[in-house]
Image (cartoon, rainbow, N blue to C red; front, side):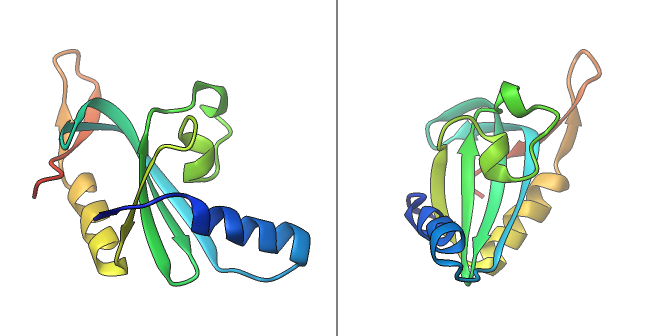
Length: 118
């Protein structure tokens, strides 16, 4: 994972809206992911954003205003979030890793865990 920004995504949106240029933009997100590494400590929303041939992972707090209406990672994450550029294979591996690390808290609530160092 390489630290990045949302510049590629913003540029693609500008092209789509203003210039009517077609881009392949796809997004999904996973809520309630416990991350305790690389400066993160707590529950975060992890987004997976694809723009044409580039893939990104977005980490941030869940946007309470879009709790029931978010349809993309950029809607679900509060503010801009932390963007990381990844390969398609790396993004798919991380996505599967998170989904396969389901745990239950003391209160019985289900959450997912991501050890970013692995």
